[in-house]
Amino acid sequence: MKTTSYWWEAAPRSQNNNIELPPSVDVAVIGGGFTGLCTALTLAKAGVSVIVLEAGVLGAGASTLNGGMLGPSFHKLGLSGLKAKYGEQLANNILRESLGFVDYLEDFLLSENIDADFSRNGRFRGALKPSHYELMATELDNLVKATGVEAEMIPKTQQHLETGSQLFHGGIVYHGDAGLHPAKYHDGLVKNVKQAGALIAPNTRVDHLKKNTSGFEVQTSRGNILAAKVAICTNGYTEKVTQDLRRRILPMRSAMIATNPLSPQLIKALMPKNRVYSDSRRIVAYYRTSSDGSRILFGSRATGLKDNPHANAQLLKGFMTRIFPQLSSESISHVWSGLVAYTFDHAPHIGQFGGGKEDGVYYAMGYCGSGVARSSYFGSKLGLKILGKQKSETAFDELIFETKPFYTGTPWFMPSILSWHRLLDRFGF
Image (cartoon, rainbow, N blue to C red):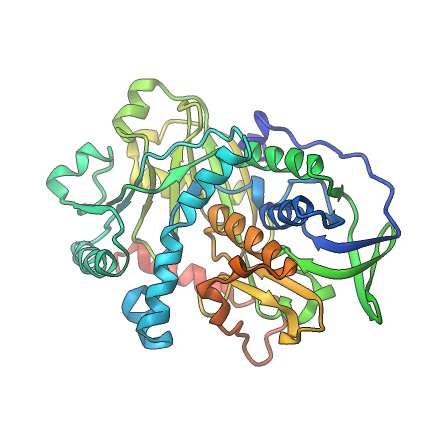
């Protein structure tokens, strides 16, 4: 069993050669994932000098460790919760903008000529209890009125057309959801960012940001760079160098497993329409076939904050075989994990650090476990904000980036909460 991402088989990570750091740039982008690369691409195409600073191996973070599943990522609070918190107009704007995330990424892949095995087959979300099905139906009615989302309820009598699992009490199909190969997507972004004229510096950790009269002195593990502006695109890997952002982020470890190749007949029986899949449990589970359709990839929250491959494999296979008992005798070929970033209001955030126009530090992060489409969209928007373009506005600009008293950025309390939620899921509460 390999402890590296299955996606790296077709798009391996390389120990990238270090480039010579320039003495100065217009913008330093910290973080070489989807957000940072999309930010850099937007800036470089506008003629801005930009460098992407990545602490480790390029593309070895969450951007190539995720499930490659794309959806609107509607807010966890639902329409009623959003309205109660933000008012009807802003709630509707957030949901409508979210509905366009997958369309945006599909168009982006075409315009950038990136082959990432994009496939738009929809998502089936199973209801673990009859009451969950009823709640899904109510939420769908509200979402259709607010956004016009294309989705339909699937009763239990028809769910065999969607899934080979007998665990559910029906579910919902979101027709606009999609999947891609995240590592191929990342490689395509890297290529295009370089072709646009941006520099990318892997293995270059940022240790300190020092404000000066002309911008910032970016102190890195390989030397210092002067930058007029800085973009923080670190999401679940946000460190103390930007402590005020770190204390607004809840880094959580998500893990995945891949089965060994399965027979086409078994794949067809379990996932008849080759959709991406999730369900209504408290601890999110997400699953799909590999891009070539030969394996099943299954993900959920990891056993703890640190990587523990064998414990994660055991936990996830238990989850997977509860949904698909047919996979009990199948072996696991890969297990891996990475950090995602949640926020206290369950929403992504984008803006300028400190709120002051003179600050020159921008950020986009907090995708709450649904980052492939969101980070691409937000990264491009962040580039436009740095350029001062009018099309940079988003409905999310109005959200306050919350934190909690005494929270410093290490969610020590989350393993206990996740264990409790797993117990509730197991016993059907």
